[in-house]
Image 1 (tube, rainbow, N blue to C red):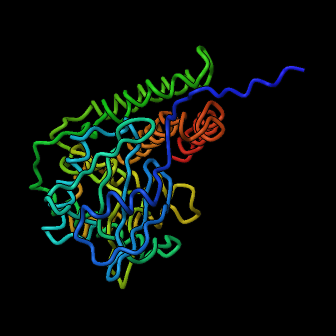
Image 2 (cartoon, rainbow, N blue to C red; image 1 turned 180 degrees about the vertical axis):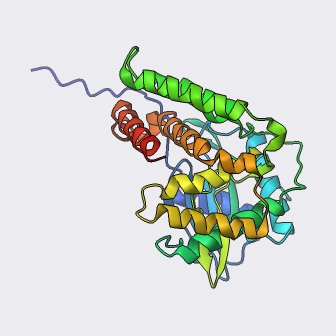
Length: 328
């Protein structure tokens, strides 16, 4: 009997997990940390988050996935966080390395990845069964918008507008639907209707400026009555109604959705005016947000897995869109 061929073949990785020990021994010494003790992999999301425990403080270490963000986009996020921190907004602000830089390049098996370290957002995610927390969050989002009105940077990200939120997303989602299917027809028809509603008003009537981009209510931690914003990976300049609509989108399935939305909006308007155009198009942007979120999942299917981000996922989410539309 011939020996079984045990030769191995070389394969590539599309998404690797960076070793905690390597980050501790190679990246952490670039910073002026007081007695770093532990670096531990904390959470896998769109990007990877590590928790860095030091003698007197805790930090978050984010490693961006290969190809997801350009260096310019990461530098945009850093600039925005530094601006907000200087304005007194409670954010998980970036920590500079000893050389003054904020972004580190990592050579991972799949290619170049970027890493930043931020202050840790102490506390816990709010419970939105409590209407007061929805109000607290609305005020925090208003303050974020207020204190970023004068934010400018030479770095660039895609603008949070219909072209990016809807058109780019459709190019991703359509690949997961059968040509001529009812779902594809519904998606195309609905998207055309949403686009027409937005384009029916002047862009100058929107509140525009810096947006968090993912204000679903759980990218904050509450600690002693203070909400600290974190995870600005989806941030950019654009239409701020998208930030408002994102919270309404998140609580849409809650039994108290309308009360939570009213609490959020009332507190937001207590600190910042909301124009009639933005108010009239909130539900439009709730639907746009859902399409954008479907595309976010589908666009990362090679890393998230087809079981949770593929064709069946898209079909489920289109059913959810139909149910939301029926409630309006």
